[in-house]
Length: 88
Image (cartoon, rainbow, N blue to C red; front, side, top):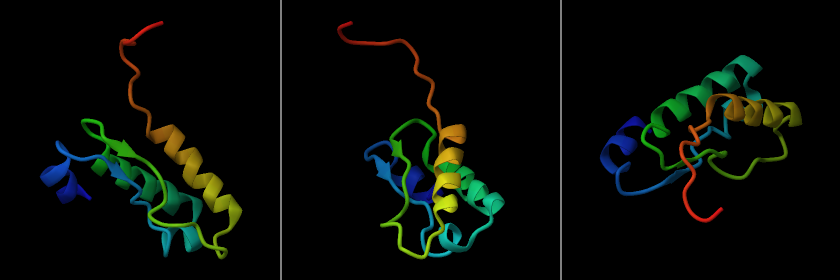
């Protein structure tokens, strides 16, 4: 993801990137959090990243792993709101 961001991050938005084949179904909470941090550190700088799983979440994924992934994303993946623009 680091290379993709460096090569194309000024021109496109990235969506996904979280490992759904190994980390999400089989990872510990610590491994899931580390993967969230790794993906976000690579793709968030400068904006243009939408966090999600890389593909559909399959039936073999424990629900608590999905919750861990999204809680970690909320904790590690906030952009600063900055000044509001537009009407209102």
